[in-house]
Length: 176
View (cartoon, rainbow, N blue to C red):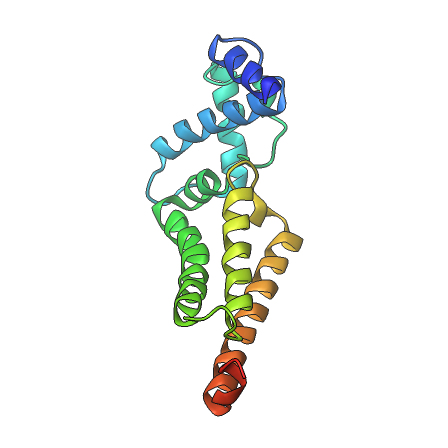
């Protein structure tokens, strides 16, 4: 925490961004410029990288950002490379499964209901991906994306199966 606070203060004072925190802050500053230029439709990922290079050339961001392939924030990356529509798609990718799982948890009035555990696990997967996405572009990697899709689908299936089983065999969920 102390190192992170020091890095932020160094960056705010105009010092070098050559630290994990400083690089991210510079990337996010660059993202602010890029989003302001193309807010509705964004740019393709190569154009985002080219835009960062141009911002570094102009001195608006430090050149430490030039080698990075993405903006190290899922929200900013979605908007920079997809505009408002990309941001809405990103929000939907997280919000729709979260709403499904939250509704399943809400229906589980008792914690021993069979769909409670997979629904809670699903909410945690979505929240974890949102949290990871604050400092990394988690959906940049095919492996990370596939894990998200598979876990959400699997946990949704568990919830739906448990709900169907509870409707067919109500005595299995009555706690007897």
